[in-house]
Length: 242
Image 1 (cartoon, rainbow, N blue to C red):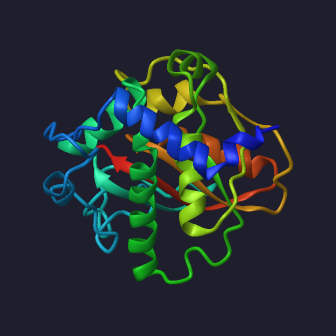
Image 2: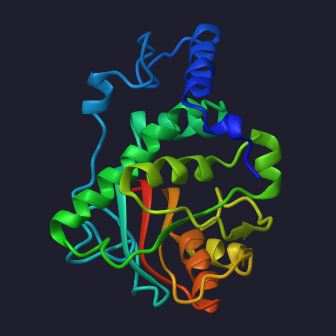
């Protein structure tokens, strides 16, 4: 059970003030003091226009012919990513995850909201039937290394912005390192690594992650949810490797 102190706005402001005093904010893109992301770097982020992105994997410019995917995953509906994974965006994600800069969680949540709202401009009904936000959780090893679940924090920030509850229902068992693997190898590497803990039957879920490379993790998590009776009409990520 969460501590009542964790719900205190005053305590939150005190903690944030202490963090700012001990570790003053600097822009992740240009190191400008006083902000986590300065206006100039924010304006330079390589946004993906959902009108031209692949609806199945979120790749930019793949709406007509996508070279990143072969066919839709039956378990997963539309996919939307906010930005291409390059430059400041890559730095943003890495600083958050690897340098433990938790103050970036609201910025990543804003990126997800941007992608979803951009998609809603093309498909106005995209969020109408969604019940809750599920997220790709960290493995136990990653959690112990970082001291927090990076996507849980982002999902809870996103929840505040779009008014949907968080469904913390996925467990991510250990898989091999994905970084050097190709598409088919990634699919095999994550097969069976997600487990659903909790009742999801009949739920329509928005499934979120930080970065989509091939989409293997997102699809495998969606398969686990669908196998337990859920629907995943929308997947979203902060960034898409391109």
